[in-house]
Image (cartoon, rainbow, N blue to C red):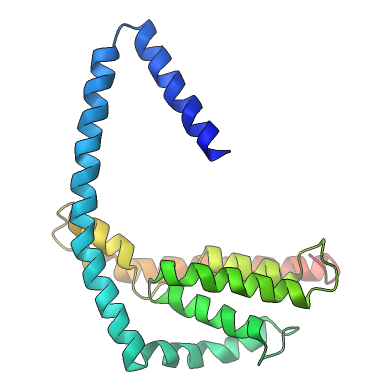
Length: 195
């Protein structure tokens, strides 16, 4: 589907450029954008390598485990119907911990695993459970202690102080996940216990 969307967008752009006799300008802009994309990609590499290294140190030092231990009681409270020692709970905790540390690439497989495990606990396979909906919301708007990708992007475009966004990022991500959790819990109550 997304391939078709991109194809149509490109086709429409070329058609408008051709009808307006601006194909030369379109071609120049394409090559200019390609150059800027390569520069941005190379600029991001250094920052991403740095933050991946820092996050790997946090993982090896046990910081990730400490964060997991910190959020485990909250997870038990939010996901009451899920057994605390289940594979689903473990995968959800690892996903949320990875997202908190800015490890989106590591969080994705754990999120998929958590959904598979939640589906195995689901008595009605054709309907998402409240736990599945809540986990999706928490995963879509995670609290980020270290927004590594945004820091790398800011550094790559020459920001004077890339780290200035850390506190606002933590506050806004906390507000987003809080709003999502509150909404899910209210919908659980109003929909009679089934989302």
